[in-house]
Length: 363
Picture 1 (cartoon, rainbow, N blue to C red):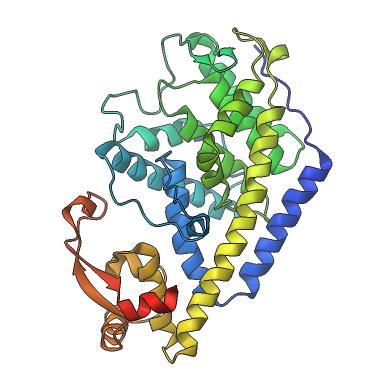
Picture 2: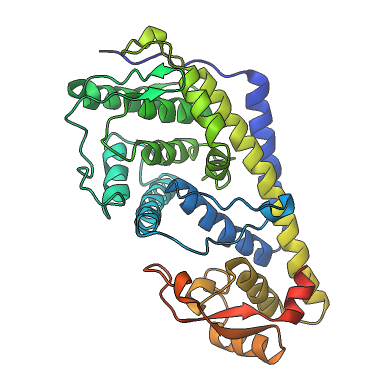
């Protein structure tokens, strides 16, 4: 039992990928702490949504892609996917922190795919128990755009998945190469009844995070979601057989797609950080304190915000006092959250919204 080869990526693409993330890292290091926190608040939401494969918001105006609004409505399945994605991301982030604090040898280890699947499926987003953390016990057939998918027999899935994780752990190749190959292998082996795409995304993040220049890539998964057709095409381009035949499975088209998506995501992240820095400085220049400026931009990002949701950006000040001051300056006010926007994740009936005056300054 063998898995397909791990091919090399084009050296120029690898250089482009590294340069894009070095530039993003430089921007993050040189930007004000408040702007960076606002950036991370936005990117965390977008990363969780795309990691859970919740359909992204597709604004009609291209400029709105810079600061996309939260979804106005989530189905129960979408909520369950968000809950699972949050748990999976905490697991990955914990593994990354462990390695950086020398409490572990690698971010990825053998049980990782099964642990991640358990998190993703713990809330049963499809409404059906697909065996959280368990490989499938039935053979599967899927007819893709390029023909039948080469999924292996159910009896071989666990062994093949473990082999793939072992290859990634042993290979001497850049993290982005190993990450993209492993994601493709998970989607090709299809070891679980459901959730294979979500597990593949999380494993990609975990493996690429070994690159200290990139870290936890906050922009790449959004690009996978926005370019769903190209993603499917890249996967199908690597399948030239309707049965499991490692010699006829080519991961390179998908690996190229995934690396390019990471480059695009890093570029968009830089634009978002610059935009948020401009908005933050605009309120400071108009006489607001830095906590109030940070609060107002944070409320604008969340559209309807609670104090708890603002705590990641207002982590070193009294949130209640900052809210009172922003209200007294006429920049935000309390508003009822419409029933359609109240979910198990965001149940609060009231939230802060920006005032018309602040909205004009944000335009």
